[in-house]
Figure (spheres, rainbow, N blue to C red):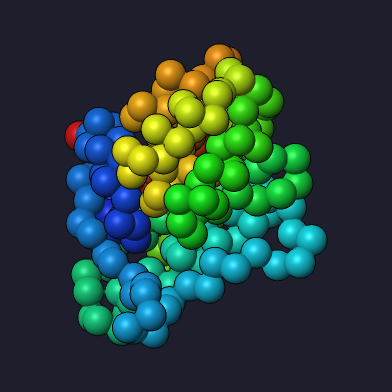
Length: 206
C-alpha cells in the first residue's frame, strides 16, 4: 500500500461532516455502520458512569473508527483509512446528547440559556490496526433565551438530531454570544484537527 492515500472512508451519516470534508478537498466514500432498533448496533454510545465528556467522545470516535475498519475487512473492501468523529455538548460535567423528544430539547436549551458550555468533538482514524485521534474543545456562550424563543426553535425541528439540541450552522447561530475555539468543531468536524490527522496518515488533499 502506498504511503500516500488519496481517498478514505467516512464512517458517519452526518451531512455536515460530508460538507466539511468536501470543503477541505478530501475525497471519500461513505462507510455506514449499523444503527437503530431494527438492526444490530455496531456502537453502544451510552456514557459510562462518571465518564468525563471529553473522554466519552474520544472513546466513541475511536470505537467507531475501529468498527469501520472491521467492516472494511469483513466486506473485503479496498483498504483505505477510516475516518470517524463524535460530538457532544457538556454543561459542566453533564453530557447533553441528542434530545429524545421536544420536551427534552426545551429542557436542554433552557439549561444552556445565558451560560457557557463546551462542545467536544473527537475525530479518529483507523488503518491496518492503527488508530489515532485528535480532540477539539470549544467554549460556547449562549445569550439568555426566552421560553418563547426556545419553544419556537424546537418547533422548527432543527434541534432534534443534534447534541445539545442545537445546530450552530442553523438558526441557533442567533443564540451564540461568544465562541472560543473551533466553529467547525461545533458543527461536528474540526478542520484543523482533522487536517492534522489526515497528514499523520499520509492522506493527500485535493
